Amino acid sequence: MRICKVCAGEPNIIFRGLKDLEYNIAGRFDFYKCQKCGLIFMDSVPDEKTLASFYPLDYHGYNKPQSKLTNFLVSLNLKSRANFYKKLIGQGGKILDVGSSEGGHFEKLSQIGKWDFFGVEFKEEIAQKGRQAGRNIETATIETCTFANGQFDLIIMNHLIEHVFDPVATMQKAAELLKDDGYVVGETPNTDSLDFKIFKKYWGGMHVPRHTYLFSPNSLKILFEKNGLTLKAIFFSPDTSHWSVSAQNFLRRNKTGKKIKQGRTKYYPFLLLAFLPLNLIQKILGKTGIIRFVARKENAI
Image (tube, rainbow, N blue to C red):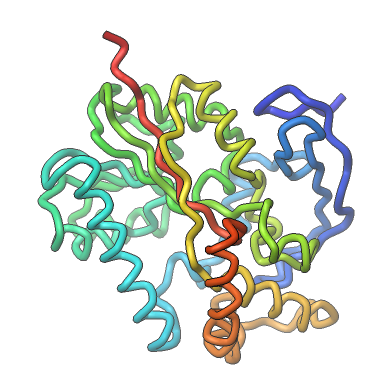
C-alpha cells in the first residue's frame, strides 16, 4: 500500500504515463497526490544510479544559460540570494549548498559575503569539475556526505528537495548538519499555483522524470516540522520559468524524440518575457509556480 512519506496519508493517482519533454529520457512515469497534505510524488522513485542517468551532461543546471537574457536574470537572482543570506547569518560563516553542481556560483555569492562554501553534488563528472577549480565539493547526496554534524550556519537547497529519493531523510540530515539557530533556505516548485492548475501534466514544475516530490506550502511546513525545523517564512518568487517550460512542453507534446539543446527551445527566452506580467499578478495573489522558503533549527536550550 502506498503512503505519503511526509504525513502518512493515503494518495490517489493523478497522472499516468508522463514522458520527458525536455531531454527525452526513455520511460513513462506515474504520479500520486496525498489526500491529506497534498504532496505529489512519483510512483516507484528510482535508485541513485538510475536517477543520476536522468541528468545528461547538457542538463541546463550544469551549464551556463544559452541566451544573454537568461544569463542576466540568473545574475540578478544570485545577487538577490546573496543579500538575503547576509541578512540571515551576516558576512561570515559556513554554507553548504546541496545540489551545488560544479559550484561556479560560489565566487559570485562571495562578492557579497565572506563565507566558506561547501558543496554536495551526486553527478561525479560535475562534482569533479568543481574540485578541479579548487572548490570543496563532495560527490554525494546530503545523506551520504562526510561533513561533520553541527557545523553549518546555512544550508542551501535551491531546487533540490523536489529531486531527492526521500525528502524526510534529506531534511533530517540537514537538521543534523546545522548549528543551533542555523537556517535551511531554498526554492522549490509550488503545486498550489495558477500555472500548475492550468497546465497540469505539462506543467514545467513536473520536470519529468527528474522531479520526484512536489510540494505546496502546506506539505512543506509538515516536512520541516517532522524534522525539528521551524518554517519561518515562505516567499512567492516572481519567476517565469515554469510558465515558459509549461508552454514549451505543451507545444512539444507530440515531438518526443526531437532533441533540443539543454532542454530549452530557441523561443524559450521570449516566453520568459511574455509571461512576466502574468507572473507578477501571481506574486500579488500568492500563487507563483516557485516558492522560496526559510526554516530554522531552533536552539534547544
